[in-house]
Length: 163
Image (cartoon, rainbow, N blue to C red; front, side):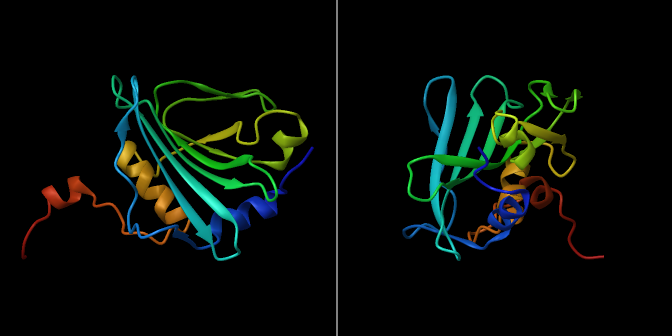
């Protein structure tokens, strides 16, 4: 069963999204045992409800997921549109028979839904980020989240003043 086509998935990722409530940024992570987690809700300009889920391992800085999901209309099901992962594991694209190492981005696809696999089981190598904070900044930018951008601490630390 296909919930969304590839075109619908792209549209859902691109639609502008504003936070539900009075937040202007993403919540801080809270310890939940082996991981720290946070969740934030957004409303799309199209009326859809979106959820951002942040998860980072307390033991391994390279083990994280930054997820964008949309609530399937008239259900309690969340459909994962995009997932930015760390490089703590190797990912295998089952249909293509390829392996992805390093940082990688999962994107929901019509083809993986048709095959009966998880909607976001397809992933590609990522060069747009190199750590958890970079993955969060990518999500904010690429998912069109109307929130305050997270600072790039490394850039701020090493900025040069004047010529």
